[in-house]
Length: 573
Image (cartoon, rainbow, N blue to C red; front, side, top):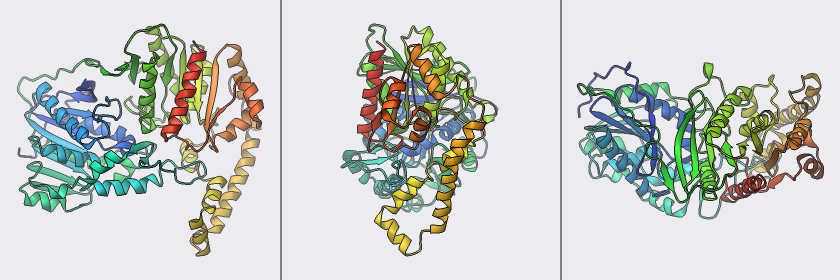
């Protein structure tokens, strides 16, 4: 395939539609030309961060008229679990995606676009398929390099409430709630792209710093290799809250991918129905939904119809896509379905696979997001769902509390590590989130570590800066206590009054906190410092999960959360 400078006009806008194929969930546009593009995302936390910019890239490629398919690997996102946590399973999935484009879009030319580990996997998949073009975005030349980088990331992502790194479970590397077990680590360690004996594609675009000599190696093997820098890589994969689309890189990739692609005369793109082939597993069945103002969600049902049971509505934690931190929401939803409970995991507008909010506004700590929750409840009503329980973590817990106080259709709420119950409109959301860990407990936790004391002795830690930070923190605590005296009271009265109102109407409210979580300050401020007093107000004790981070990254913490939710559902019948 020759990549020329001409391309299909970008005014042909073809929306992506959700599809399922061979147990994999994806987004597809059949295109109007001969060229098909498969997007191979990266893995785990990096893909959680890159989810929305990656979707933007897929949409823009589809707008060029190329058939486009972006999908979740087995065991990731909304895909099934067959072949999960296996390099072989992931590579096989890429090849199935290629065949899907050939069969369903009649694609004659295939281009793979892979991000980070996805680039590594795309290169492996291309060794056993006829691939015409390959875009590798900051790939790992070897699996060992990938594992080393993930080990470094694990020390900074998902820290404990005192600021210390999250303890690792024996034999498992956990990065942002995603786990790499010994079997997967062994498979990854065996990857070495520099040892390829033939070029994976005749035309290759390498974006990012050259690692492992891949460019010269592929050139020696006969490929035409183009290299470009990757400005904006860190902002793309480092944090879901602040992920940004690297516009320069995206534009360059689209130009390269679409160059020389021509439409087929008379071809008209026919989009598949949104739920043509639901994904099924042991005891569960899932289908994608659009409701309200195009809000997206995944409905997870029990495979066998049973008596009318309570259902669950999951809302986003921060800007994490609906599958959740470490994919825990998908796992929890399917576990509930096996016990006969239907659930809907949704993306608020501005998150995941839902459209932007007006003006690109953030959904975090915004009461405007209640409209999306109401749209979800409207849809659940059309399905004759039983009593609905809303579940949210962090900012999602704030939204869940606001929703259950306003919506009589909600019969219960499970709040996990809420930072606050009411948001002060005078506070800047971005500033609060960025500085939330900069507190006295964080500094104290660091100073308890021997390495910190040695750095202090060498003069590497600025004591004055710490003192100023602690002073500011102390002032902030005083200000926080005084400020409510001068603010208008929230609708419905104080938090304690609203909790009492919920109990009078028969709604259940259960709170879960990690031991030492920063949100406990708001709990004590609003419902009392004594566990007994808090329990009297709530009607039940708060569940404390010791040894867990804010996001409940460990399997043990997630298991405990599942137990608490199931107990709440049993109380509702």
